[in-house]
Amino acid sequence: MAPGRNTLLYARPGIIVTVDRFTVGRNSWQVTELTDLQTGRGPHDPVAMRAVAVTGAMIGGVGLLLGFSGGLQRLTAGAYLLLGAVFLLPVLVAVAGDRWRPPAYELWGRRRGERVLLFSSDDERQFGQVARALRRAREMHRYGGWEDPLATVDPWRPNR
Image 1 (cartoon, one colour):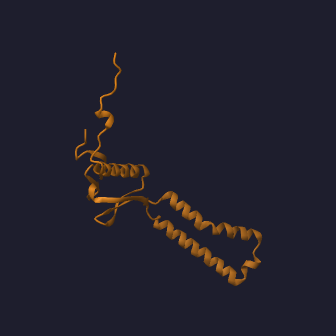
Image 2: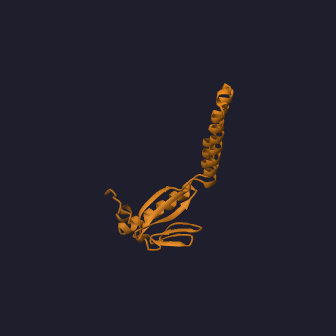
Image 3: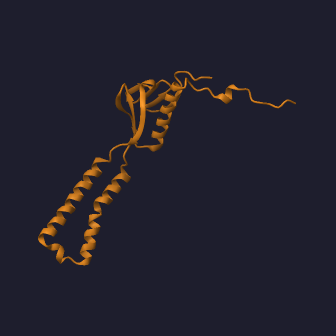
């Protein structure tokens, strides 16, 4: 039995996927208009990126000052180890920023030839469910609906 046109594939507050429509917040698209669905990750957190840039610039400035002042020649082995550890600070800030605020998962598609951000979420599980529901809706249109072949056939029973 083919599902009706209003068959609900996914529904959570603000997100609805039916066989015909994909609605996120105030945006709504017809499933048949959406093509070339792609998933990806969004940009890194801007605060973390700024922190990495500022930390890197400060450490670079200190290194330049020490280099031009001749201070690098007078440093002890312990000071060199400390400088090496300090130079790792931007890397640690970047890793911590990605842990605390990871890039969002994004679902992109084309609508009438224009690339559109359809959905974005920090929750990987929710993102996967929405993306799968939208792909199922597109498949239903492509193949003319779903009809479970095993449900439409009478099961084989031995003659007794």
